[in-house]
Image (cartoon, rainbow, N blue to C red):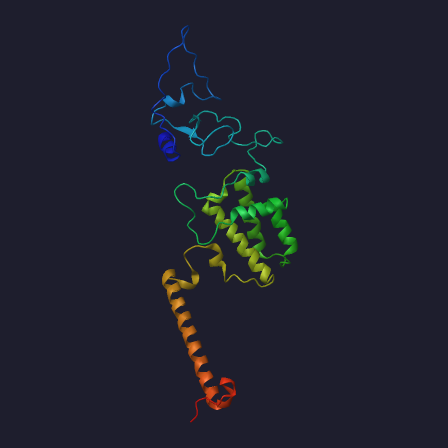
Length: 270
């Protein structure tokens, strides 16, 4: 398991330790110190079936693929950020979490959604305004002029709290999570619908905002075929428009033959 992870990260396998060094002249070699409860067994001597914690980010002096500790041992300090104001509480400040986010293609492929990834830009905008998803929800309620008691306000609050928990408590890189991206897009659907009409929102563009392949307006129809048909109809309409303009121009020439060609009188006459 550990070797598979290290192979994906371009690291050498654990089952092949480095070549042995000549022993010192005097005394036995010192034992390798254990790291925060990890077994004293060297990382290079672990077997293929041993489960270990492997770093997937470069932080705290560790590189991608470095073995942190064996499974079941206590994780080293700093692996999971704890809030200093509440000892033992798993939490990270929102601004720090956003600063460590990476917007890239995760291992195994990118998001299976149409359109660009929006989660990182949204979080950076909130951070620059000294807000979090929850505090931005309160700001949105005060400025959006939404009727009191509307259900969209409760949905917006619920999604905002879920998103903030993923970032500050679970400490996830939401840019690589499709579920988090869908939450961000749903929040934007609600805001855009209310921005256009606070009292009567329009959700007709929700499918395009969400970016999923399934469309309510095209059930049972392949979207590529629908796009092809739409383009063909557009081309036919453009051709018909040009033909109509040509017929109108010819009709005007017949009615006013002397007004064409700069007064030369060379127009068609019958």
